[in-house]
Amino acid sequence: MPKQIWPDDLAARYRAKGYWRGEAFGDFLRARAADHPDRLAVVDAENRWTYADLLARAESAAGGYLALGLQPGDRVIVQIPNIAAFFPAVFGLFLAGLVPVYALPAHRQTELIHFARRSGAKAMVIADRHEGFDYRPLADLVRAEVPAIAHVIVIGDAGDHIPFDSLRPGPALPAVDPSAVAFLQISGGSTGLSKLIPRTHDDYIYSFRESARICGLTGDSVYLAALPVAHNFPMSSPGVFGALYAGARVVMAPNPAAETAFSLIAREGVTITGVVPPLALLWMQAAAKTPHDLSTLQVLQVGGAKFIPEAAARVRPTLGCTLQQVFGMAEGLVNYTRLDDPEEIIVTTQGRPISPDDEVLILDDTGDPVPEGEPGHLLTRGPYTIRAYHDDPSANARSFTPDGFYRTGDIVKRLPGGYLVVQGRAGDHINRAGEKISAEEIEDHLLAHPAVFDAAVVSIPDEFLGERTCAFVIAAEGTSPRAPELKAFMRGRGVADFKVPDQIVFVPEFQTTAVGKISRNGLRAELRSRYLKETA
Ligand code: OOB
Image (cartoon, rainbow, N blue to C red; front, side, top):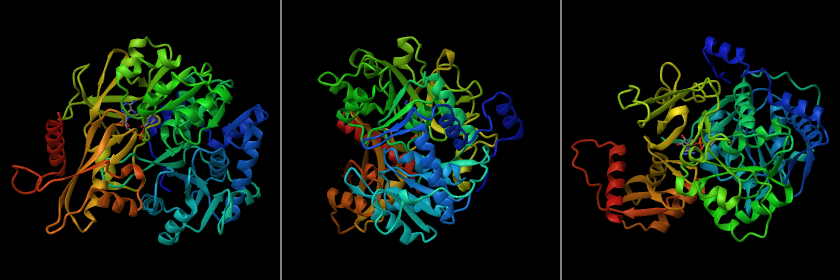
């Protein structure tokens, strides 16, 4: 497992300033369990576990993983929905020095096989079923393609696999290096397949410890995980880990529907939660008629995609709580509006960075800094922003400058005080309700269909989703494919449902005046502007 390397001088500075404290995930869970063993840590529909329960379950899992023959440093794919058992499963991995690779519950075999191969995973930990989907046959498909996956461990009914509940504590657990990679997260992806994001214990714990402070979490807070916790936002901004770091209670919502969330807010006295903009709109609509008491809710975080100011302004009047805008990325940098910021800042900006040592550059197309207040490309480096993707030299060459700045692909402007306002994206991904979709990845799937001669995928503004996907397709000669057929084809290829184009438009050709080879980027831009003009 390659290490995530910061240059020595920066690493020394991040340690000297107390950002990186040499603490690993297992260390902080042990500390909380020792400080307040009987406090509730994690709640779902069936379980209410204290910090002591959680640690004991994680230690059993850790011993059990190692007894299977897994070695510290091995990667393990984790595909677990929002259930309490997520925590013993992943803290067990951390305690054993194993490295989770977080897949989303929506991912299917195409994505999982890619993660398994790229990470060299040796095992999978999954839930049996969730919201009507059976994850066991999916794991079988992955294992059939990637024989290096020696074990499938199942929470719930394991069938032929290893029951999670059969894992037992073993001999002493290994010492874990806090500067080592703790887990791999999945990038939203702008080109081709998702990249794997290596985060260390030191850097990630800094990001959620500081996030918990910025978001006002204390031992009395109750955090509702409404979005799937494999996402960086509900995982660490401050998310479930920030909440556990603060000794707070985490409540796992099986889905983010307003009814589900509101009944949990009322039942558990939830004080803070985070959603993507389309959900915030639904929740605000539902709040008017809900029988549930939402008065404990102090902070609604909204992030993952642009929240328009008109909607942002309605959060406080409709939900009676403070809005916190969150603009972050799994690669690192996270910005928050502060809870005591003036309403104007909260409503119109996407916040400012966590750390005084987050370096932010806003550059024009030629790489020069733009004047203050002008839009430009956002680049960043700092104490919790990665310096490279896992095992991906070509993506690294594109995404990082020689001096280690990450090119976010976002176009932002900076206001006085360092507040950022997101203007859009430079790259070609679609931000569909916070899920990032690579246009290129979808085109490649469509091109695999025999009736598709060419395909170009673009984002179309959508009132509810923010953006939706539209695929322009040129049919192969002598064929006349239909949209439902192509959508079914994509589903059949085993990809996450959110990647299936919302709309497919057949065109006889991609009009272009360019001679020779045209860039797909240019083509997408042209199609987007043509389409927007036609529908204006
Ligand atoms: C979060 O992380 P990712 O990795 O799924 O996506 C990152 C990208 C950003 O580069 C930006 O394009 C977009 O999502 N984004 C926003 C935004 N928050 C994220 N665009 C506009 N306004 C916002 N508030 O999405 C993520 C990670 C941690 C915390 C919050 C979100």
